[in-house]
Structure formats: structure tokens, C-alpha cells
Image (tube, rainbow over all chains, first blue to last red; front, side, top):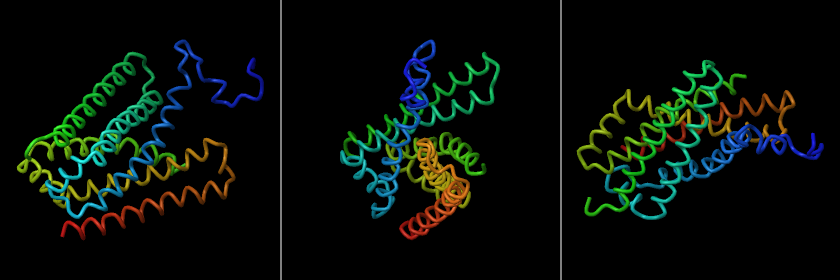
Length: 131
Length: 110
């Protein structure tokens, strides 16, 4: 109320909550979704432009910065957006505090672990020697 | 209503199956010719193809209904007829994009 009626609904909740991040999760989900709209379109377009799907063609694609950098961003932002989205589902359906904490922690480990594996694989392709 | 449920269902599908396959694909490319051949063999198996088509459909459906949600976040598109038309458009759009992509892919792989 102190912000007056000119504040948007998001503006009213940003920075609130005991950790002052009540509105950030909501906003992050939308910001990552816009990034993924761009990166997802890039991925589909790139796959369409590849002449074939043999391993050598893929290595050449991912070895160039124009392939490796967007792919790294796609991996990181996809796992972040997936974690945020699945957590909303958990929060909606798992009401017991302990179970919810356990499930959200498991999801965090899965997302960070998956992203690390994918990035390690991508890096070894991008910086690898003779394939 | 249906499109809203689909948004969540497809989101969960691509979060788990989609990202697992993406990671496995990158690992197979990194590991070597044998690992990649194994990936291709499973991916081009009829069951593998059904899974991949399902993943790409989920991706397009989630992307299009995601755009719909972003528009609705701005407060637009809540009129009943507009809202319904937009919802139907995401379903038609994802079916068309998935079909077009796979007609093209299967042509390349051949």
C-alpha cells in the first residue's frame, strides 16, 4: 500500500518475504523462458541446417564458438528453468514440509548434476583433440 | 484449461526425458564412435523415434503455450474468444511444427 497504486503487482511483491526474494522465482522463470525461446529456436534452426547427423558433423558444429557457446547457454538455462518449473509442481502437490524439502533437494542435485555432465561432455567435444 | 494442463505436463516431460536425452546425446558424441553409434541405434529404433517425436512435440507445445502465458502475464488475451483461439492455435501449431520437423529429419537421415 505504501508504494501507492502506481506500482505493478510484481513491483509490490519484489523484495518481500523473509528472505526478500518472494517475487524473484516468478520473475526468473519468465526471464529464463524468454532466453530459452531464443536458444530453443537457435537449436532447432541449427539442427535443420546441419547437412547430416553423423558424429563428425556434430563435432565440427560444437567445436566452433557459434555452436559451443549457445549450446552451453542452452544447457545451463534449460536445467535452471526445468528446476524452477518442476519445483512449482512439487510446491503445489507436496504439502508435508519434510517431504517437500527432501524432494526439492533431490531435484536440485539432479539438475546441477545433469547440467555438469552435459557441460563436461560439451567441453570435451569443444576443446577435444583428434576425435 | 486443457492447454494450461498440457503446459505443465509437457514441461515435466521435457525437464526429465528431454534433458536426459540431451545430456546422453552430448555424452555419446564426446565419448567416441562406438557410444555414438549406440545412441543412433536406439534413437532410430521405432520405440526411440516415438520417444523423440514425443519430446519434440512436448518442446513445441510448451514453447507455444509458454508464449501464450507470457502474453497473458501482461494482462492481455483474457477475452473468452481470444483466449480460446490462442489456446487452439498452440495445439495446431505444435502439431504442424512437429510434423514438419520430422518429415525433414527423416529425409536427412535417409
